Length: 305
Image (cartoon, rainbow, N blue to C red; front, side, top):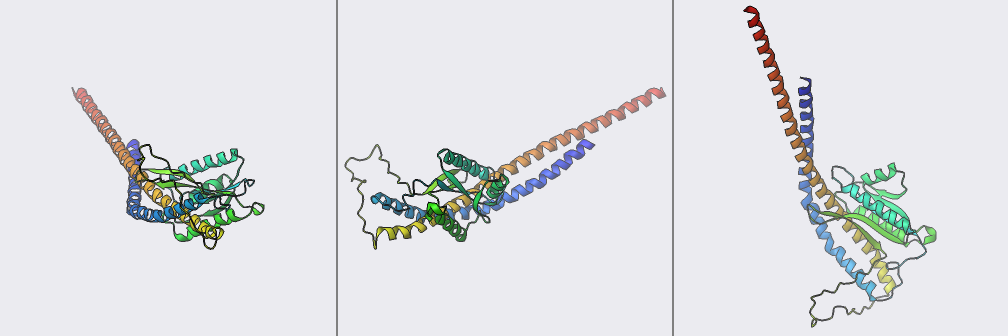
């Protein structure tokens, strides 16, 4: 009897968890379409800004913070985009693992990484381990707004534009999760500043008679190139961070949906397994009771004879 009560208690508690998991999956399913669309809508603008910066960088020798910083400054800013809530599978742990790897590589390279964290889960993780954090942001990681993107970009841009003597940094890195599709989300490390020039790869089957693509266009900067880059730099940082926040939000929602779907299936399988064990225990109890009754009846019949 005690074993049957234990099975019934476990089945009831597992059924309650199954309802919670299923509700979380349905909520994530209702949010993922919008989150994915918002991320896709922001991508063309961010890509256009990035292409414009790449074109300017490829134009010629430019001495501007957007492409170079003091080489003797070892301080580097690292921004990790985690989540506020759990029940998202390995989403936050993957970000933390990649961030720890980046910090270790920077330490080996003689750098002094300074950590910035977005998301309550990441903040709790690093504070529990007494890791120094320059600044944190929490709230609405699954629905990031323009305000938090502006706050993060202003803080990082301020750290990057300050001179080394005032605690400025020489590089900006961001660790986030790129949304590929509903099943695949990849953790990426992006160096936002200084901007790295990405060379176009030549295709093997290129048409030899096609026009040459390597010719750089001519630019005229008004009033001058420094003023243009000073205006482009904040827009570039803000657009890249906003895009990463939206990609991370879509990835978090997709990861939560997948995790809750798996948890719901596992809970149902566990309920089925416990139900079979409960039925087997009940059947064994009934068989034992029948055996005792038959044995008692046989004993009475033998005694009467």
